[in-house]
Image (cartoon, rainbow, N blue to C red):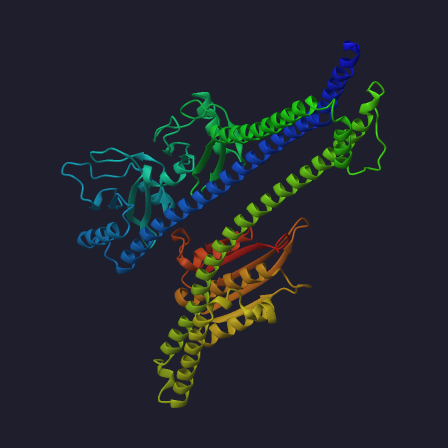
Length: 603
């Protein structure tokens, strides 16, 4: 009889050696691969959540800034119209105007007009009988009275039976240099940022005014309106929120700031009026996605390993009868590799071909791992590029809309002004009965009207003045000055300092537009006889700046009133390049407009 121990020993040795080989060639590389995949997955999910959080915060801040600007502009237009009409004390007229604004701008919960002493002249809805009719102690009255400019107040407790937190926009009523009162509109603080859109995507919102007082907080935060945050005192969560709100606009993680004690990713955004918007993403959502993905990956790995183990068990049962066939199949699977193979010295002789095949399989597994790692890196890079492109597309869309608005004001408005000036000159008695002069002016009116129609028809092509591309900044300015001088009695001088090279196109465009708007204001409103335009390139050794100065001898503009759309577009154009526009009244009469536009770093 054959020796049972002798016949079974090779089988047990084969099982042990094959198990070691399986662990070394398959299990360990797979575990390393899974660890790397989970690490890369964590970084990718965190980056994706951070990018979405930052983009959403920026978009929400822009919408809120636009909302406040629109309602501030509404108040300013009403105040300007009543000041121009000279009927500030007409209470019936105010009632009519406030009722009309209330119909067209439902965000206003209450509108009022107060006199210079703070007493309410008119209100919509009307104040209840016996109510305090003085607003002299309110921020929305005091700040416009002192600064002479429109103002967005901090959050305060409103009057009336509901006693709800409110925010007010107000503009001063100025008769010359005399303060005559304010026009104010208040809105519920809880309605400034609609919360349902953010909450549906899992975001939490915290809106703070200039004093870090809570204006609006979503339900996921244990904060209420009118509650003030202190970076040094109070609860630790509130201190963290206050520090985060005052910090730069970087995504950071805050511990225990949610109502349920959870952590959150937060990004602050500064608003135009000095408020701070803090948008939060609960860390639980990010962790939940990581867990789901990790569980799915581990489940797939378990299925793969389970399947492998089942195959191994089934194959091992047939190993004694078909070792040669198994070796042949493994060699075919190895695809006849030419690389040097490592043969374990303690492995049974009959399994050495199998070891060679498994070594080849391990090499291919490492190569596959390298390919998968490279593919994952490429996918992450492409995903980041797509996110960047999407954000740039949104920015370009908003820039095109702002550019279109400026072009409507700058080009079409100037042409209409020229028509008005030319038509007004027909009434000049110096023309007498000269039909040729009148005909020449009429021909000019017709030509300008034709040009205006052409500009309206091709407005999409006029986002940049063509004379800047073909002639440069100085010839373009001289052409504009010649046009305005021909249709007005203002004598305009131009002084452009020599520049060795063409400036960036964006700088030339902004300089031309700002000068064009400033000269138009001189012709329209200043009642000036002389104006001077100076353009020079300043270099302090660190950066170069293009300085534009427009000076006139007219009756001057009131800088405290801020100007209309033209003044706003001038400031916006300069701000887009990192510059600024300053309007000051000159001693002895007249106005000086100074624009400083950075040159270096502008494409």
